View 1 (cartoon, protein in one colour):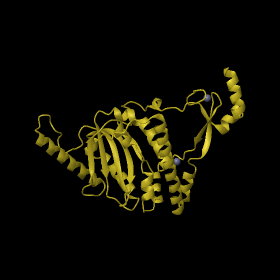
View 2 (spheres, rainbow, N blue to C red):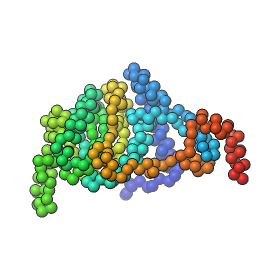
View 3 (cartoon, rainbow, N blue to C red):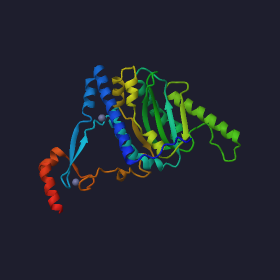
Length: 310
Ligand SMILES: [Zn+2]
Ligand SMILES: [Zn+2]
């Protein structure tokens, strides 16, 4: 019997997002407690600014819209979801426009020391300057991800490269090559990549994967959180030093053709704007403490608005 999930109706979808939101809030509060326990009060204080009830006032009709504050930390379970969504909106069109999208994952040996993140990132900077990259890759977007499954921090780089063939000493397959020659070339190319990357992170050899991938799923996978809330919570290692390491630099960036505008610009128009449920105006919001001063108390102005509309 098929177990394929049926599409959810509106109620089920709302119920599911409420459940996900509640779960992420629980994670955020647990993370806050954990940071307090680790003596990282400054980091805990950042999370404390998240999820506070406040409101926006519609500048078109004066209606109030309740919202929650966001701390916008990349490691906040609630905010990282929204940050990831915004990144997909921002970069999706450019990534979909790549001629030769090559999905690359570059890893380094796990370590209990959070400095491993810095080593990985400096290795990536070295790798980008190598012939294998400068001669074969037009540009791309990279993102840092750190996981922890009980055996140390495992930072790795995911990148979507505009690259037809990622090897310098191995020639690309020719369309007349028999299948065994093609397999051999792919195998050599894989070895070359692992060696070149390994040298950048002071290892003889390091796991480096390259596969052809495109489409929405790949873009979402690339632009997801830098570190998962549940990985932080489950880790037996101190998490505050790792969080500081993540906060100290970039976790995502474009380079080459993706940066210098040869491809379609960011799709700001694609970003959905919050619409007023009262008058339908889009993106016309002010924080209520300012909006209320301009429009008067909410109840009085609603009466005025309704009278005016009659
Ligand atoms: Zn309105
Ligand atoms: Zn937050």
